[in-house]
Length: 344
Image 1: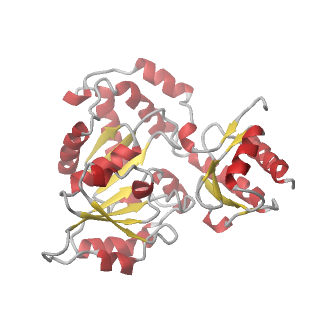
Image 2: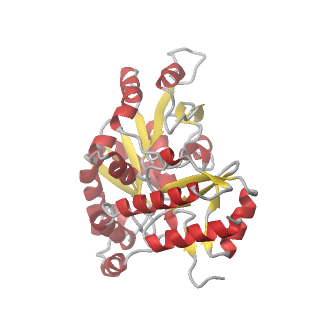
Image 3: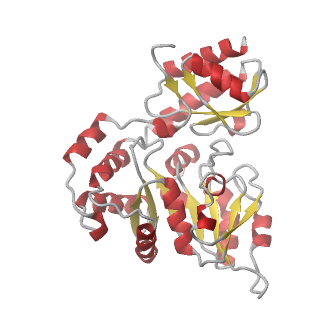
């Protein structure tokens, strides 16, 4: 095996920066269930201000953040409109159905966004035979659609439909700061129309644990109770929140480096016979590509033996994700390993 493993399976494999480790060690702590952890309180206030919302809630993961938000918005028996490739539908163990008693109304995702006409047609009428449409969910950036970033203009037709029908909106913004950098829009502008937003600290922002939910003060008050119901009431959570404060101060702008490395990787993959990629879909730090020369499982296994880790991504696709700790030289090494694996 090579001396260095280049792990580009996900941006969740990042390790905390030295500044984060120091902040965690020195964090001032209290009991967050009593809302007495000063470091958590500081992180929540900073996140709310950064995204232009009234309040925020620290949760252990993006999955919990989405579930807390969806269950808080909806009543049991409601229907949630979502894209059929959405992370909340595809990867979160059916939590909204199991815990919330909610039904998914899945629409074809298109290129990261359902067709607005289909969204409007999916909103249920006030009829004794129909469940209530409780929520519309969007995702930005969109993971399974290759990390595409959605601009305010792209999302606006669905936002206007939701407002017209008085249906709340939740944004799975796990990588919303990647979207802001890719679109050139302030993060506040991207999230302004949404009643709730979840974003991850533990992906490109490189924290060891945690996500945040932001929204109105009343929504966050109710979401805090939902979090407690789900077992997410942490005690001296400031030891984790401290890393989040460092991330929001130091890790957002550097995401542009990940985007540049992803573009370098994608353009290199495009030149390798036996692999195929749609370069127009590579907009942030996610690189989804097709393996034509062998099965994806075989490609992943052979590449791992070369010291490079990627993951299967459905069908003939594999995924690589650039992140903190992956440098330009690592990308070039990964491309060389890919060429060896496919015999190019």
